[in-house]
Length: 265
Length: 265
DNA sequence: TATTGACCCTCCCCTTACAGGAAGCATTAT
DNA sequence: ATAATGCTTCCTGTAAGGGGAGGGTCAATA
Image (cartoon, rainbow over the protein chains, first blue to last red):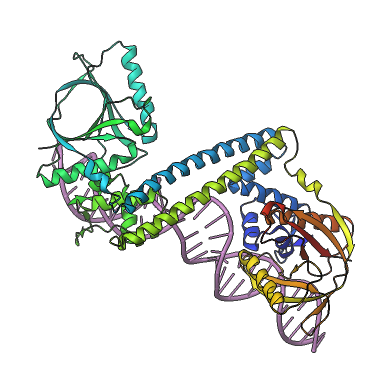
């Protein structure tokens, strides 16, 4: 039997860590003296501690490690978890690599003594008096991560019912705040002929900017439009919407073209 | 002036986030109505929000971003921070890559139906009745991260005073628990002749195992030794120590050779 | 045997960057 | 007038412990 101090010394886990592992049930001491609450560990628990440390070094969470330990006999589980973790790691690596690239570009900009926010000045704004469309649409509260899925849902419906779109698809944003997991969005497709399922979409005068690239630049476009609207003494007049000029499903992220409209007066 | 909801919609920052940024002083609304505490933002603050989001995407902490914003005129500061962050990122990438490699090896082991802890069985333990040394030593509370630095300190002292080592350097561990930032370690070098600065080091009978590879395998060695000592009915008899057969400074981590000794009886 | 120093315990607060929700005003639309 | 939004503050929770306070225990020494 080892005291917690001895166990700590051998396993290279701090006292705090050992007590915490006890608390969350990851590594409970083999024996606890009832009268003074001293923790005592078995020699064999040292190997469990090693295993935990190894899994932790692979960035498993303690919760995951607990599950793995509880099913230690199940080699298949361990195997799949490790496979998943490696997949995870490679994703992290590609994520960091692309970040590193972007950062490098910004550093270059800085070294050429340009402002890193300079790209904002590249965004052009046009006034558009928009056409009237007959649209078929679905309005929903969605998670922004599932946006594409909902898009495709409507697409297949159109195809299935043999309706013919007359213009690119669009999305209208009704949310009154930014809530990425519960976004009030209306996905719509303009049709050539009005039916009992279509409605009229007539936003009137709009300020428009074109976004080329990843969706994550969207706040820049919105900001730019709002600054422009304020500077030119217009007022917002209805829900903003976007028209997708390229298929967001098959187009690589960086060459997406999205037109962003704000109805104004 | 924009209400918090409008600002949220444009900037794609949630209400929670905006209130939090206000709280920590990262992005304070331009105006707060004193009678109802409503927050109102300037249009120009949208660009600040964009900047914050951009820096955040580069994994700067909010605290770092605050510093950068406070010194926005200082282009040199921004440049150095970004350089540092990129250095940081490349380190992360190499770290994840090496992790991924190790993980891959373990997955292979699993697929060959071997236990991933099997390496423990490879560790051989020998009984050694150790020689007596005259050592010159320094005992200190150190941070394990600075271990090598302290080692070199003693080395240069030896060189400077023209003393001749007779055996490899060693370290004796007196800590009663594992405390990586405050580790009670005695670094020692055996000398040929006793002087008034040396003392006798005579650990007696020891169990010994050799660690080849990175320091982070040390808990395995300790565990193995303790299991062995318990199984063979010995008892610990003094502070464990390590003898460095290779120069930890110039040897690549994975081919380090360290002998780990536990005095026993 | 008394004491001292080492060792152990529990409990509470702190960390990051918010999310979730409750309870209660304020404003706006119908 | 009423209802629906919108805004506020306040509390709790997250992962994996670290830091420290305050107090009980153990083993070796005087």
